[in-house]
Length: 345
Image (cartoon, rainbow, N blue to C red; front, side, top):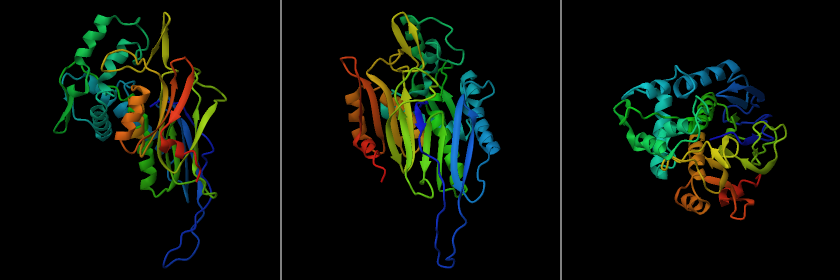
């Protein structure tokens, strides 16, 4: 979900020898291409190897613009903004449809821990597009907003995305950047690029290896810090990813103080209140970005034991947890599959 990963040692480079039945010559050397910029309120870095340019800065910016025009609640012209303003619904484009379908799937699987209809609660707690304009909400306000929150109040009928309550609004920020890295990865795949790393706001999608060394891509997980842009972030774990996506969700940066309470931006859509468990951050590996990004939210909403129980029942996910122990000290643990990714081979 959110931006607490730093790519480390992830430049791709070198060449590849391919032999065919009819052509025993050497394939032209692959060259490194780097595309960097600012989009979706954060930075992005794309590194890939190809014989010639397969993705330019202008093409990347066009992809980001297309995604923002569909999914950004911060853009008044976006399709999701139009949906939120509609009384009943609308016909979504392919981006919005894919993201909502995945969100609904994860909502059902998690029992509503992840729920994109949480937007009214996010705004109530002062984390929406308008910012923190209100004090901490009263219990009766939370109870009233909960009447029109819930993923079962959002549904598809034919080609239309519809709402059962006209007050229902959605926010896909918890899943959109994972989907974004998938879209860019798909663009590169379609052009035959076999080695790349795509990073948007800390959400990472990897395919292939560094060249010419053939080393597995290395990704560093940052130590939790309340500072948004540390010049020298502390890496507390390094994993080697052969293919797939790695994303992180945490509640240690986007928060505000209310008296002696720390109010996190992560809201439990089942209760209407901010998350209050031992989890500090969760890093998830999955086969694609949209899956990892959705489930890092789910695991943030689970106590540690239930998180491991959930992992046992759902294949294709690996996790690294940083959490607060009962004595107030910080500890970490990981699934066996995530621990195995510390091996570079």
